[in-house]
Length: 80
Image (tube, rainbow, N blue to C red):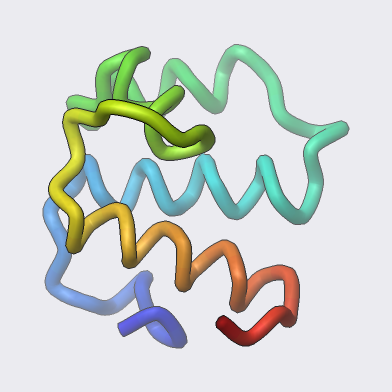
């Protein structure tokens, strides 16, 4: 699923979060408020975006957070 997340059967807010994390990880200088707006339009809260990018209490389930961690590691070409 991490290799082909765009076609995986994920909830829209998960896909929007992965898109946000991809840009944050690979092209942080291109990240704008419009990227957060797109995620919000898909149903992602500001808190959920912060949770996906940082550690601490989260709206996301442990499995969803593992997906984000694996995805970010893949983008960074860093196996975990």
